[in-house]
Image 1: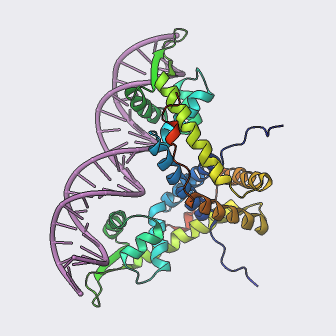
Image 2: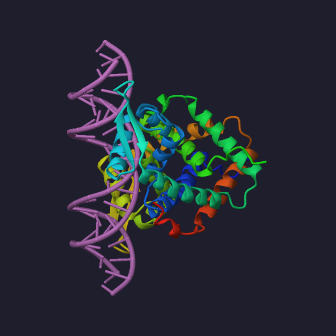
Length: 154
Length: 154
DNA sequence: TATTGTTATACTCTATAACTATA
DNA sequence: TATAGTTATAGAGTATAACAATA
């Protein structure tokens, strides 16, 4: 006998991710930030002195997209950019005092949010969960067959 | 002793979801569709005769946003819209022949993709995984404390 | 008045291509 | 020529507000 209609795993994943990301972004917005500002701040704090090229890779976006976000953050007084004297092509990005304050504020929100998400779970459950996430990422990396025989389905 | 730095669960989730959604959208694009077209087609097939209001809710977007997508799909000849004689405010959306063909084509791609994602997992593992996803959605629903004491951090 | 859907408009995030400056 | 970053531009997806048609 056949199992009773398997839910597409990617659909379930993206649905939950969409909901949680929206809620997280809401929380960040209420604290004066945003999801993308948070990701950039996090990358800055975890990779001090990194070039924008490296930062963009950490965040998972293109360099030009990072420039876009940094422009906004610089206008908001959260970061400064100056040329590296060692290699004047490289721009060193640093948090201002306001940027540090914003980071601290958003960190509290992020921790609170994470605690809320983890409510009712055991560490083992969540470890198994993130293990599955990692394996899914590996599976996505594998190329699938091209749908070349689908063109004339109708 | 303290556990060695817990990864924020939402960050792990959104990272994997971003990767898989991008790969899925790529696959859909190669087959002549897109992720959002697929979601709308799926909603149409699973909710025949539904109003746009209902469809939008199924997809998880606003009515105006659905109109936007339907405009594109109607221009592409995938759907038709006509007024419901019973209640002429309601527009009945139906797949054309081309729309049905597109659905069939994208369904193959979606199934292939899902099979690829599931590779190496047992049903039990994936059931546990989707169970965690559902519980996370519930946790997101719970309101967190307002960060009212952060306003004057500086 | 309430409901269904559309139009107009705009915002966010993202990307690519062409450019500047440095090496 | 190659590398780091910026500027200009665009596109996808989303949203809100104002509107038209219908009930």
